[in-house]
Image 1 (tube, rainbow, N blue to C red):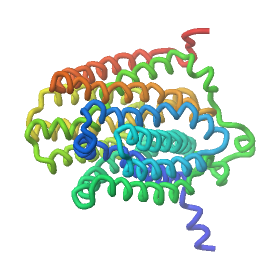
Image 2: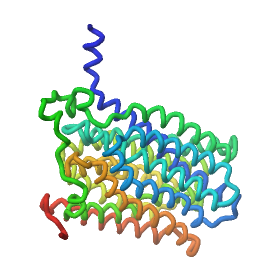
Image 3: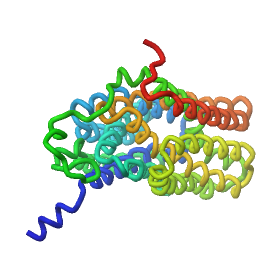
Image 4: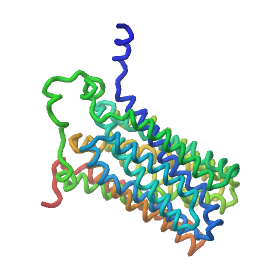
Length: 413
């Protein structure tokens, strides 16, 4: 009897958060090891930096764009099967990338495996977390996606060590096995609705009426026509043009400026440290000061940090950039799903988040690859980095306009 009482005290929403944390850790952590592979891929396939960067951009485009499909599928079928299949694809994609004989085969294996796999797993998993919380939604969302930050901290140094010890091909096999085994295992713990577990959001009691009704909120078709959604979409697209450039180009940039390989990879880890801090600490802060205002502050912070990067020429300023950028990037990723839930409710939150993330997909496709091709032409990253800083400054202004828009304001009929 005592054991049963103790068991009931555990709110299952935190188990869902732990599952989401682990899925984002192995999924995005594996994706963000890519910077450690840039040099060996360039060398072995005699490829330009732009063409190698395009591998990551294609994967990023797919895993954010696929949310528009995986979100509605999760609203209909549940997040668990999509997350399990997605993590299987991540594992297969990494393993097949290790067998590639040309850069085109890397595009296919890594781009499709990581792109489709993370795309199927991420939006459904994060959407499921939103339904379990109201008062502590910012904190829960931040903890769930902090797996991306911890993965960015842990996985690139691990990949660098494995590449030095085993070679890049064998490293992709190891990472693929890790992603499949851990990712699929943790996906089995995802649950979509607290009412199925006999509780309401935040562990509150539920009543008979609540159990019989679908979650409140507006459908996706109506949501995407509001000024708030369109403003958020434009802000995220602008931001993403610069946000994902460091994940591909920070290590090569540092090496170009005389930083050692170990220290250059450490910089990527520092983005992970900052990102983890941003997601763990700032999600709860956003609940207190206002999640919408907080989102604007994150866009402005990313703009300032990217401007710092454009003029950093040694390890110390690069380390400061990496930490500050990581904090603000982490805060942005943590709070965005919660803001979507605040604006539009839980009725089709997975679908709406998925539609919004197509903006990030476009920015991810354009930003890192364009920065790489710009470097191939000018042998400098200054212009694309400054462009990313300006784009994030504009994103902050657009987000302010979205906040001020009336809740039900429709842009077009």
